[in-house]
Image (cartoon, rainbow, N blue to C red):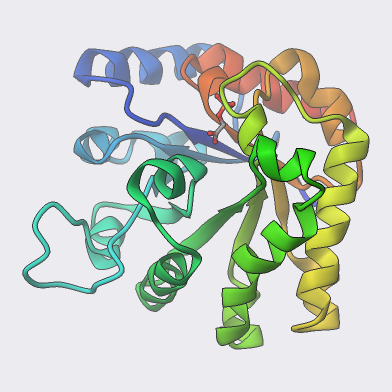
Length: 252
Ligand code: PGA
């Protein structure tokens, strides 16, 4: 069985003191590598602060977003090549906070996925329904719209993407989706992917995100539909993030 893929999404939190303390706290945990495949996505200004330190723990670096453009007059944007240049291997794309507050569309996300793949980054494409959509029984419609844009990718390109199912109502709310809800959504996602390629439907990594903590990670990871987690709040302390890896290890 593959190790769980555990991704820390720090969102707009941290400063230099925070990063240095996090690194010092990481050193107090037992070995990170071997327990999970780890990725930390700090805000852009702190990517370089990690330097090579994360490598020594066997932890990869990721961006929280990327421009759809490769370079040029796009004030405030950060290009995929720049993320790669400062040591990123991953990038989060289509997080619901960006869809919700910045009006990012699935088509826009597709363009970001394209430039990221060209730069050699692994896109972590986030999908998931709002509370209103869940109440209106629109999970499948929502996932179809968000994942539909991926049919523009070749099978080879799609095989390099990771998906994260993040129901909007479970993000930062303390409300966790039930295992049944997660399994049903992940099965729906695999069914949609199977329309592009049957083999990929089985091999694509699908993470769950939404109020994951060390206390609930073991039960959630028990589902063979879940390949890892995208973690917000509980990734802001090295101990807590590490303990999510420990919790998962109880399930394999
Ligand atoms: P949360 O955030 O773990 O704080 O719910 C998850 C996310 O937004 O990726």
